[in-house]
Length: 171
Image (cartoon, rainbow, N blue to C red; front, side, top):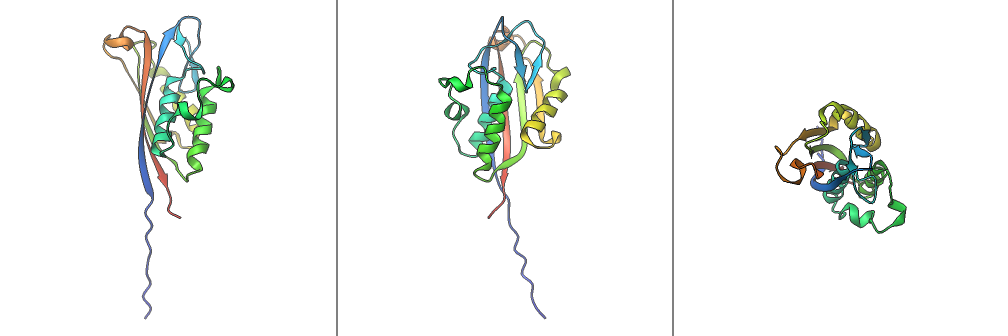
């Protein structure tokens, strides 16, 4: 009788955390999670200032040990002036793929007093899933206020936090 040896391979997993903040100003469009949201103010930044996507990119890059969004897409580079952050996210996914990583899941929290984000969450999730090439169920987005405390509470800016799990199959 032959003995059959099963080799079980373990998928390598890593986690990453990202944080970003941008100031709210008049005269700019508000882009969050890859979609335009009607509001009297928008976020100030070198790109479209999509704070949610920027935190997500930082989390992905951190999980793959590839530094941060500013390293790969510096705000001193003209090519990124007013760029759609979905392009940066797509490039970030390509960067982590060079090291063999793919998204397991993402958990994102956005802190803003206004506008109310809950009506937009499903659309944001669908947009991000399309850009990242993943299932919409792999992305969680939550919105919260800071109970009128701090810069977000005073409606001076919006903050976003992202945690991701990335996976890599062994060679």
